[in-house]
Length: 115
Length: 113
Image (cartoon, rainbow over all chains, first blue to last red; front, top):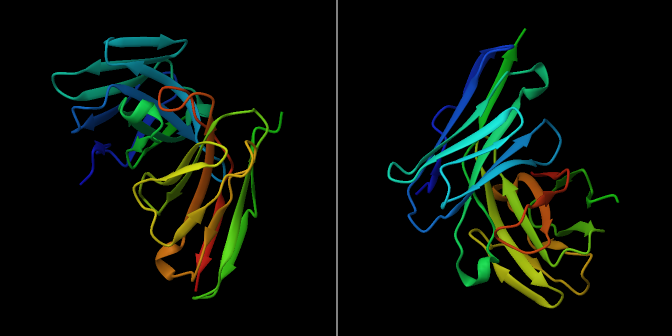
């Protein structure tokens, strides 16, 4: 049973436009959410995170929105650039057992930025 | 800082063989993790460690063993390799666990034939 779902395997966006990547979760114990970016043949790298006490977090061109009632979060990239082409993973964490547990990942969305 | 390093980058094993995937971090992080990523899937946690001498199972531990004798190293052992263990394996570390950013290594691509 997937606890973190990314229902779009791929997304194609024109350079300069907004990219919106979506993520849904089912486990109401999750209270911290992260986005990771992954290039081919590399490990994932951290992009941005949000705690469940907030509904928005911004970092430069990247903004994450959290809707707790809908158990939904989204990552907005504005403006999209060619270097943003990568696979984006949504991940979640619950503060149980001292927070030592690893992350629960979605399957990822392959973002393709077209020139 | 090299960050998180993993060796080897690629490996092909025959069914029933064993091997150890190496992971080293130079950031003095307490927490270390092993994940596997199957094609088209997200990463799944195999084992994690909260410090030297302390390890615990994740979501998919069967067929694997780990040890953590130092802060820096967290090797993953595969005994009796099976085709179902064909995957890309990522090691990660973080300073303070669940809330803290995890830093990932480049991965080891393992094929079991």
